[in-house]
Length: 345
Image (cartoon, rainbow, N blue to C red; front, side, top):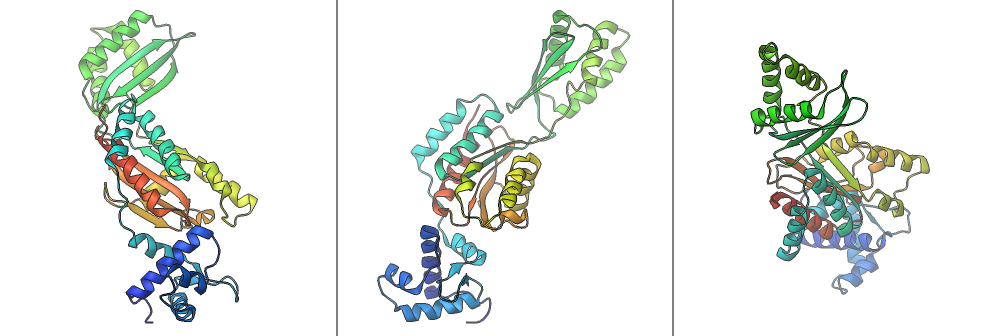
């Protein structure tokens, strides 16, 4: 075989059989096993010759001299690329869409997406909504608490909700808070957050003398971040404990490092951004993630970027072993993504 030449049909067929056998058993695959799977259409000797060529091309490795062969990352990448796109049943898609519609906020939908992915795949489900600077204000709410504290609630028109408790330097009555809410909601509902904040600061400066008391309180709340633009992603991951049952060849310390990396939202977003580079709506599959973290060498990521009905970008993905059931995981990612994408508020 010529190095890097396209595999002919026989080699593709045998390599696919080897990968499937390894996914099923987790054990090195021998020529007799493949011969039986192919109903003896080729002799074990002929299959051994093909396996030797595949090993030379980097598709197979041999842990021990007398053992069978193990697919490499290159083999898994070929296998995934040869799969047909997983089917999305209309009934299942409609069920998920209705489930998402029953949830009131983007955060709830993102969290539910991660749980659905775990339920369908028994791997790690990851979902993230990514706020943009162009988000539009729906309304604010100001709830008085004890000791001059105020709960500030900001809701955008794509149904993202942000809560923040702030401490004011002076007492503010519930009536004053209601008046401020009414002013902001009446004047800025529908505005992009960044533009609303800039205009609010301008009005505070220009109208300070006319409405000194009310504007003074409004200025205090503005300084506490009343209309601050927060573009931190809403990330949710579920099912990390499923990694414990995998043979990832990791020491206890390396496994601890892996779990620590998955607990950090910033690291998760870096993982999604790095390996889900396809345009929105296109499935991405990455096998072998050691570039992100050495402990992820034997893991694979399947996911896609979508734009929800509200216009907010989101990412949906499954993290699991290279020996995962790729057809099932691909179908689960597509089903969840399509349902999340189409569900209206």
